[in-house]
Length: 232
Image 1 (cartoon, rainbow, N blue to C red):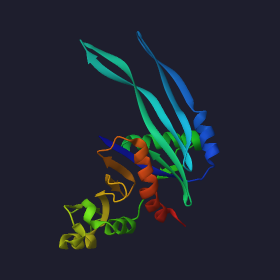
Image 2: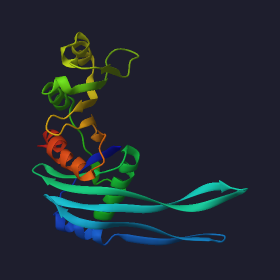
Image 3: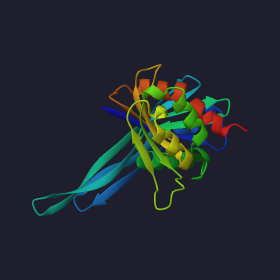
Image 4: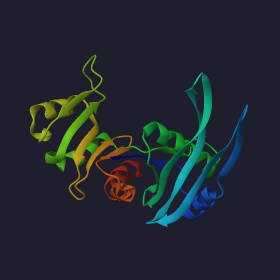
């Protein structure tokens, strides 16, 4: 089992009471009609509750997929659900969407429209290359994989290293001179979780089912890395 999520930052801070009010009022319902098929199609946020210094809820939207059956293409309703988590921090407000990158991006844009009435108010969070390099250097023995981007060697876009004690290898030293760490897979000392983390804040926890534990990990270990990037 894998739990994946992506972290975003709110361009304009709002009190959690305003965020909660906007999300609580969000319910859009339409009807899909095609021949003999009629389905309610909804978008909404439910199960909103206070959590830590923020709020947590469940975003859902319906869509129509089509399946082939005995010479017919039949429309069928599907529902996407994702836990959403807004957390206040000294440097701003962050949103974690528990979904893989593409779907998380879509949901973040929808929530931006709900809360701010525009699509560009919830932005991709970032970790600086320097911060990610320092994070790895504090626990080099537990890093399993590193990918580098921004490589200055002609015709090479990315470099990668696999294995233990990567910081002690000559290759790590050489790769660090030619590129920036983009993605690392490491074992967290405080939690024991095996985690993949990118600079644009996609987070994957391997062999984990508990979404609350995943978010607790994000709050304690990942958000502080983003704070270094977003402080002014």
